[in-house]
Image 1 (tube, rainbow, N blue to C red):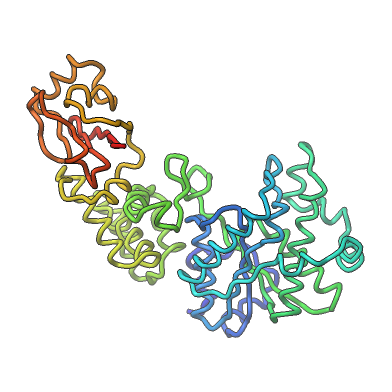
Image 2: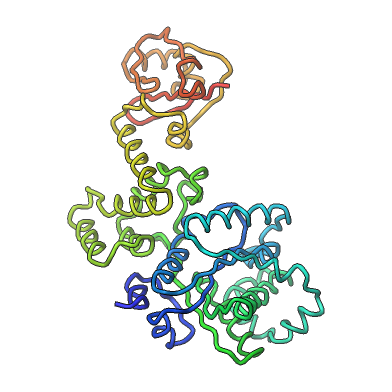
Length: 408
């Protein structure tokens, strides 16, 4: 099947601007762009599926360009409920540099910055060359604008649509871009760019959106315990990413495989059957974790994540490194100490026991492990010298409750 049919099968096509796009995508040779604003210094897993569409299109013979909105990011696109807080020029520039490097390293895309064509534009030129092509009634009918009218929307946010349309037009004029790809929430901005170009030049551009990746309750996919799953391994370690995918919802894991991996149809159908017949094996979840982590960070990072998981499951954590401890136990209760202390005091200090009496019961009962070793002597000293990297001690109480003591 052609690339259009493959994207359809994967559920990656939500809207297209013209039926001609099927033939054009299958033929190859289009130059297209995908955009993101530099609101953070790393992409997250929510960006990943749309960036993978670009990778798929590239392999089908199309030319991708990544636009990082150094200009639009200073304004901020309208959120459904409230205006985004403004970020400084310095922060936007820092984020741009980080995203440029990340996108180049992971995906190999050419990266452009729309600040380059906004920084020298004056307000009169903006109104004469672009603003006059936008009917306010047309803009008010766009879904993202309509959703904000009751709460109110600032002129800056209202202008964001014009700026995005300008991006499409400028990239068409300067780099031959003839298509934009984005999430479904950007459909109004894409069609605004198509209309602007048609009015200014008479030329036809194309747009395609993909469905937003969601959980079964309709909320956006890509967070664990309220924290985003970042593509930067310093923000989200391969182990944390592995656990995130391993715990994905059974009813959504096949969708995630279609969206987030390059596994072919036959393999995904096999994994779907396994997920139905032997869900306890979590074969689909493991394949999802393997494919994404290997793509982002390499096979060694995936192997390390699996090994860490095995050590934690068995309780044999003595051979972990300090860096592995940091990533494994980032979300467990922790406390900082500036001196060595006996195990009873340490248990109380970190919250593993409510009193010395209770701590003594845990120790005598054999339910306390320090850095993977059982401790039954209440005079045992938790020391910096025996900590991972001389920085962290891991205490386990019972089978699953972990606590970390960070040594100053």
